[in-house]
Image (cartoon, rainbow, N blue to C red; front, side, top):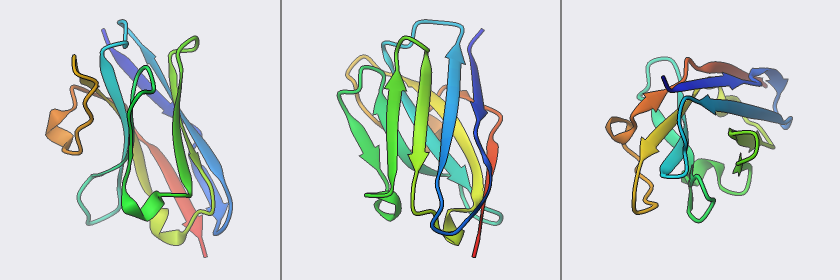
Length: 126
């Protein structure tokens, strides 16, 4: 059974940093792309960043480029999202997701992802 467990959310002031972790278990993830999504109240869930498990391909939405970094620790089966220079508009529930892919492709649509974590709240105060 696949499990994705997020941690690392919390309350931080604008300009601060947080690192989110997603511990993955239940199968070998070498043929998966991992994504961090976020959903703010009243808004649709959006892809923030994505990475193929071997790290060959990455994607960032424009609003976080230069501030967020996604990475994978294969030994720990964990995906990270380092978030720096946080802004109040980054406030949302952040979700980890996994998408099976044989071509190391990254997708932005939520419907393309097969497994989801329960989410972790990130709140950035101004």
